[in-house]
Length: 187
Image 1 (cartoon, rainbow, N blue to C red):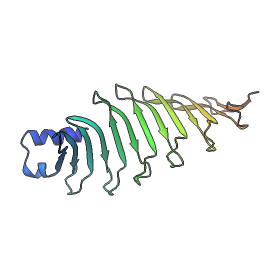
Image 2: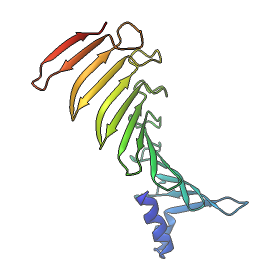
Image 3: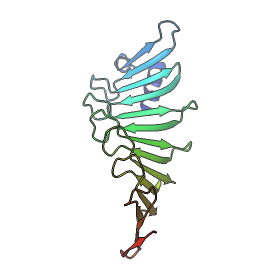
Image 4: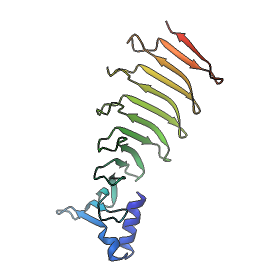
């Protein structure tokens, strides 16, 4: 968003012709409303930022952060112009495989991952004050959660597993602060 604001500010403030050449606005032919801003953020002559607009309101920004001609970051904005979620291609191949969701204060609250990179979310991580507190995962791809992790600060405190496909944990590994571990069987 800072890139977009800087680009718009440069155009409005009478930036040099070189700067304005890096920005290409596209307007709706019927209404004249701004629909898309294409931008060369690093000045290398290649577009790397596409800001989808509803007039002056940002709807979505797509970025090619590594200059390989493939989008690897998708930012979605709420009506109040705060970021709602960010999609990313962790393999940087143009395929979104994770979605980060943010609170109004900008802190991450949830990360959804497609670990198999097939578009299906199979791991969800939950955050409080920027730290992961717990996670759920479908490890076998059957569409049901079968692994639960709980964190104590940065330390993994426990992992619960559903080894019988009953929909709830039947085994729990509890990790001590001293590095010890114990297995609990849940009837």
